[in-house]
Image (cartoon, rainbow, N blue to C red):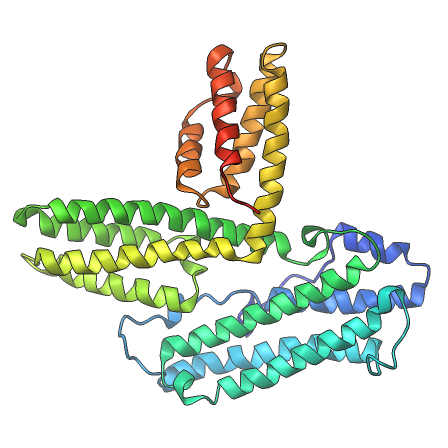
Length: 378
């Protein structure tokens, strides 16, 4: 069974990609290109992120045993088969070499051939990695490598679709790349939930520092509960393997302390401090190109809505408040990018922005504009 769903839904193309294909005057060329795009969409779907939960272990130096290899062998096999399925379609539809293939706008066949060569090279690299002693001797390193390769294949396929579609007109990735919106949504979810986890762990660290001896156990139990809650979120499932490894190890240590009758404050402080540093490092998700592009678009759209809200604040406060509420709703997908903006967005969730009037409406709009102006999205 593939790591994706056992019976994944049939691949489909985005409306914009369909529009591009239908606009091509060469119907035969369009049909061949459609076959490649459908194969790419299917491969991207099947190469979705692995759910690592069933492979987890809190043991730091657990090497891959026979049972893990038995579980991962089908995943590795299916990964190779899913990539090869796309390569085979490209070979069938656009045979030849990049230098010899000169047809279609922007030399799309040559572009596809070059992309195929890069993917084929990556398959070779996967095979080499699976024979590397430093990988196969460490359970989490093995999982991380498989996860990394699958992510890289998806990125290469997405880039191939985007670059080739871009030769026919101006498009965005969201308009043409299969699965792009789902990937963005997953990244936004990881950022938001890990940001809240960071606040929770920092607050817990401060409480552990100030705890009286009889309060240490209670704090260990509370932190265990908080981590267990995080472990049930979509963000936890989508973490990179190496980040998840450290979370799992911390959960195991904290769970052991929570079972003691009188755990040492210093031990709990050390574990919580290390956890806090780890969770803060997860903000590196903001550097993903996927989120950078997303954040720029949301930032610009929010700015336009707030300008409209400001202009209408006196002559049409109802329309102004509606535009403000729409901007705040859109900006929630920026949550986790900046602590100050996060605080504003948490407050905005509790307010009925669409009902604001007068000075409160104006001050909220101006405060929101100030938050966006200070956000570094470029």
